[in-house]
Each structure stands twice: as C-alpha cells, then as structure tokens.
Image (cartoon, rainbow, N blue to C red; front, side, top):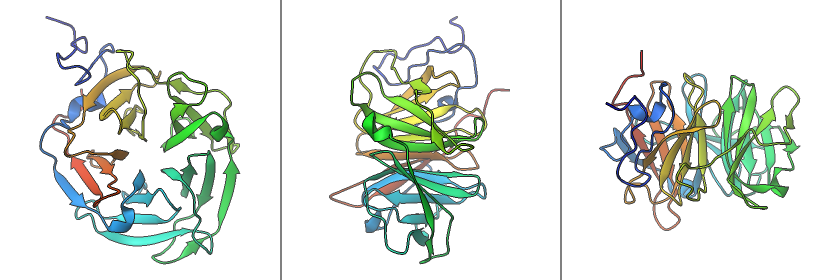
Length: 275
C-alpha cells in the first residue's frame, strides 16, 4: 500500500497530491461534485474579483473596476450592504481583497494598496494609499491575510521577467512590502500557472489558490510546497476569480461573467480534518 499523500491521480492535474503526510485542506472538498449552493450575484458584480471574510464571519467582495465593497449573504447571494473608500468612488483595476486587524485592504493590478475601515450601507470611509511598487515586478491578481506572520500576501499572476508566479508579503507592522517573494509557485507537472485568487486557510495556515486560465485549485503548505490540486468544472466555473473559506469550513469560489451574470459557488467539506 502506498503511504498517505503519495498517490497521484490518473487524470492530468486532476488531484495531484505530492507532499508527505499532513493535514491537506483540499482532501476535504470535491469541487467536481455537487456544490452545496450556487448563487447568481447582482449584475454590478459582473467582474467580481476578490473575496474576504471578516472575523465575525461576514463575506465581502468587490468588482475589479472600482474599490466599491459589497457584503454578500452566502446563504442567498443577496447583497446586504455596499460601501467604499473616498468621498468619490475610487476607480482602478482592483484584483484582491483582504480583511486584517479591523481594516479592509484592496489591491490593484499595479500594486497600489488601499486601506480603510468598514462602513454602513451607502457610507464612505477615509483611506490610506500604499504604493508597494509590486506593479514593476508583476501583474497582481490576489490578496489574502496571513495572521500567523501578520502580513498581507499579494499574489502575482504573471511575472514580467518570466518565471513562476510569486507571492509577496506586505508587513502589517511596518506597512512595507518585503522585497523578495515569500514563495514561487511551481506545479510539479511543470505546466504553467496563472493564478487569479488566493485564500489562507485559518486552521492549517495553508495557501489555496484558484487559477481561472487553468481551471485549477492549488494548495500550498507553509513552506510553499504544492501539496494538492483539483480541477474545476468548466461549465460551473467559466472564470474563477476569487476564493475564500467561511468560518464553518465552506469553500467559496466566485466567477465573473462579462457577458452574463456572475456566480458564487459554495462547497461544503465532504471530509473532516485529520486527527
């Protein structure tokens, strides 16, 4: 019998599992199976990009054309409130959202990072602007909070000088970007990867990426090793741009739809974590 986590599925990139024995998050989900729910979202979230969950369990999202934030009820897909930074709507190519230490952070593809407080429905917040400089290195496509290192993790979709996509850390104590990537994401198969969203699993600290182009979900351990992947269904996930975990363990994936309606798909765990 093969040792746990040494099995590689026969279908290419369907569910590679290549790390030594450990608690692998993606083992708990079947994204090829029937989801727990799939919601059609409001049309002004047609280009939904980032997802984030607050410590109170509230789910937030944004469209990539502005810094407007929507709180979404994951049970129904209905918008509960809408707010944003600045007296006027801040426009830009925003690609990732995170919540950390009571503040919201939204990042643009050029590395511009806005920091602001949550607000009531229809209200506006003052904001801080951080120029990370990351846009000189890559096309930024995701953001997540890593509480264990007290950092925001910024995900690169394409590196301008070539090489695998990098994940950079923005230190929440200094409000500065660390100059070198924390991880470079390499698939064991050697195939290319263009990730579009990033989440940190709170219990394990593992990083879980979604890649719209390759229709993949990829899991990294705390050392940056790929420990599992799963293939997404083409019809259900035409353009997966956001990924997050709810407090009850539900995996949430958002798909934008420039020519239709965007969707939010929820996958309940089918297995519990290892003892």
